[in-house]
Amino acid sequence: SKKAFIFDLDGVVVDTAKFHFVAWQKLAAELGIAFAEAENEQLKGVSRVRSLEKILEWGNKSIDQETFDRKLIQKNEEYLEMVETLTQDDILPGVHEFLLRLRESEQPIALGSASKNARPILKKLGIHDLFDAIVDGTDVSKAKPDPEVFLNACELLNMPAANAIVFEDSIAGIQAANNAGMISIGLGEAQNLSEADEVFESFLDMPQDYQQQLLNKTK
Ligand code: G16
Ligand code: MG
Image (cartoon, rainbow, N blue to C red; front, side, top):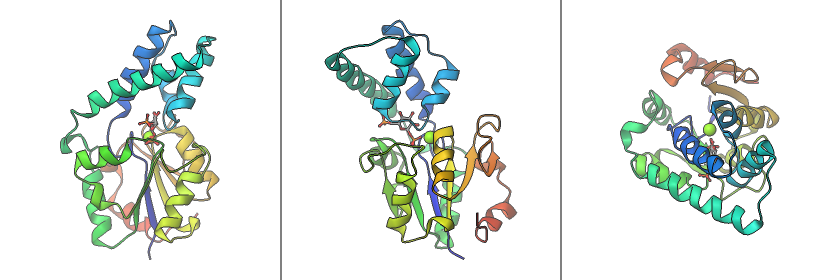
């Protein structure tokens, strides 16, 4: 049967999470705020504006609106410089093959990302055309864990939420999928993603028969 296959971008399709980490860490350092892996984990899937708000909360600091906006522009410019270095080789292991297999069996595929840079990144990776629908940070008003991004994706694919399968690397994203009543599959460390219906370290660790089962699975 047909399912809606919805992919997060950063940390699922491509390892841009490491670029976000470098850029946020630099920004935090400029503000005198400590920022390590644990903090970064909590920013995954979180919008740009909300991320800076969180960093300021952690550091118990406040800055004026102009500085806030300037810092975000600077962060994004640094991030985009790193994004420029991306090639097809940076697609995470097993993803490209999985996408092609889904297309072969004519399964609807969407991207559901919080990033405002999603479209240019997919084009850079040469996989933009594998997606039937793209919903990103420029299309939604409510950030993950709100289910808006994934519900919009389902609507564009013309599929009910109960038939959707979401691949996510972030806690906020798994919660968004669960809030939408969709099957949530975590990519990454199981200890971070305990709320997911299933967790794999990468797409390479997802057994072929599990992939086949997904086509018949409902929540
Ligand atoms: C991504 C990242 C977040 C990032 C957000 C906004 O979400 O996980 O760390 O802050 O997008 O990205 P940008 O600054 O490019 O608009 P996702 O949902 O693709 O994992
Ligand atoms: Mg992500």
